[in-house]
Length: 116
Image (cartoon, rainbow, N blue to C red; front, top):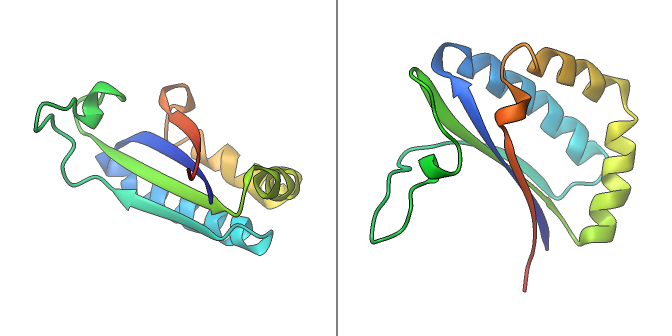
């Protein structure tokens, strides 16, 4: 399994629009072969048990919430194939144009993870 994780700081008043855009993008990802593509709302991100909290990874400003999305693929090669198709789809480009009106993309944290 190969997963791509995104952490998004989102203004609370723009959260519904953010979710709407992500749901539309999820349909496109799955259409081109992603196994899953889900968006999550943070419920608890503070430090606990001696661990750092998620807020240390993404600095939240006043009136922001932390959202997360996880896209799943069979392996890195499958991810590459799917993303080439997704990136060339005009619908995803339109959604990206909408998304940059909702969040500051320079503050998004992204990582790729492979199951061991």
